[in-house]
Image 1 (cartoon, rainbow, N blue to C red):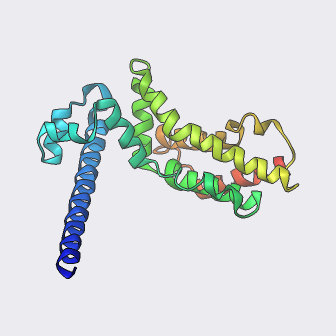
Image 2: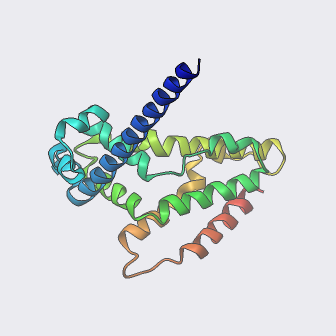
Length: 212
């Protein structure tokens, strides 16, 4: 029995090591892919160049990602972390607390993120020729974010904290100022800096006063 248990333990440890190695390799590929996408854009990016930057064979990338679209989708997910945990948190805390937390995370992980701005710059430049890029970003980031906002607003309405407004149908009204801030950072920040902390405070004040 001891021999059997020892053998099982060795198999388990070996399996865990392989899994860790696989995850590490995937992280290396995603980091290399982001760098290449950011430097050259979607159209000019070649899988061969991503593989070279990651220090692996081209075929290795296809063990993890079916094609360039799937690689781009994974890069977006690795860069934008705002979605993590938001929908499940909609039952914890008051509506106001949840909305503050949600918008604060949006500013921390999107508005302030140089990497997200690189992705958005690529979308603006290339989604006309490659509409799947905008669709990927919408599926992976925008749609889950809007759903999270709706859940928070519904909770606030049910608790009597928020009025029932058209923001329930158009949660874009709630996140709109954050998108403006992100575009401002992308286009104008070098010459016309935005005080993001003060802007976030004003955004929260404006939204909560309009819902109360």
